[in-house]
Length: 399
Ligand SMILES: Cc1cc2nc3c(=O)[nH]c(=O)nc-3n(C[C@H](O)[C@H](O)[C@H](O)COP(=O)(O)OP(=O)(O)OC[C@H]3O[C@@H](n4cnc5c(N)ncnc54)[C@H](O)[C@@H]3O)c2cc1C
Image (cartoon, rainbow, N blue to C red; front, top):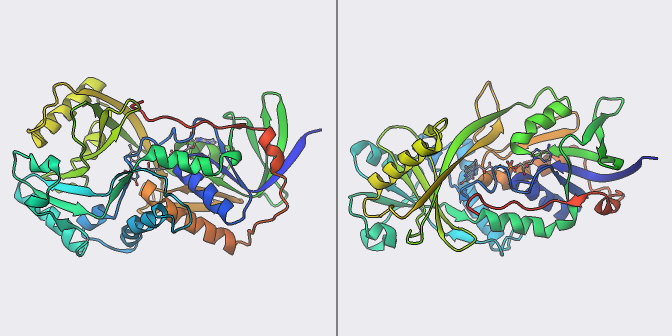
């Protein structure tokens, strides 16, 4: 006889979106479990730079409308979690930098863009006086303007470990393709049947959430959903390691009117304590399709031009390809805010940015409540602990 289990909510995908949802839902009394096919965080989450954005990009565009207002609230929202005063207690999460800067090297157009950014953010972006420059910019040998943003940077490794630790018992490993979605007579997905190695069983739930990043497309196909559409944005990310690198957290704004910062740097440390600079922004987008040697050459050249006072000779450079996975709305547009859509009892979700994850969780929770999904208190999920194995946590690329 096939065993059967049940829970209120089944979440697929153990990146920031799935783990945040799991924590929120369980804190609200729902019985919820999370299923992961690979290692937790192995998608975009650990590859993220961990910047909690306050909406600078929208401001540069001159539009501080609905979506931009949501993102501009996010730093405060995260800070209340980090202070242990909101829905998830993140007091033990490491913050890599309390500040994030924007550096405009020179040139009229880049200065203008910087100015527009600060004006439309009405005081939230402040010019830094030279005597208050952080050490890295005090040593600058080129003229530039430095702004302080409301953004800050979290250590995604510590964030991930904390969210997993809080719900360890309810996070499980599954094999790709070991599940089949079962629909009831009204064509709603109401259960999943598993056939994994020597185990066969059925798992029923009130709702299913797909928050598997790039993996959402396969799940959409597996569940035969018609509506949700996804898109991928490839990036070629560079990181460099060097004992003597100073920590730096900065967007370098370019001289063109492109809204993407030329370079976005965050600083991390690897497992041996060595300094890692992680490079995003335009360099990662324009590097798509370049081989490692060419991409690393471009990164070295850009860094040497922007920061001529730093010696990169003894620095080890690496790069890797990764896709950003987002919803595809209105024919290839990507949403500016967190996005989910429900079809046949399945919610398919993308946070769009790590920063927007709390907003995604709020919207999904409101939706569940308005759809009459309440904690059942009667689920048979306890038995699942012996059925699935625990999912492991991934490590950062530089480890
Ligand atoms: C290089 C880079 C830098 C970024 N920097 C920032 C930043 O600084 N700030 C910011 O706000 N945002 C940033 N982002 C965006 C942010 O990282 C993502 O929006 C966010 O991590 C997405 O989280 P997720 O949980 O939806 O997906 P992911 O982190 O991709 O997690 C999806 C998980 O689902 C699993 N999975 C896949 N298929 C299945 C399946 N069938 N069943 C079960 N599990 C499955 C995967 O193994 C993975 O663990 C960055 C993204 C990238 C790529």
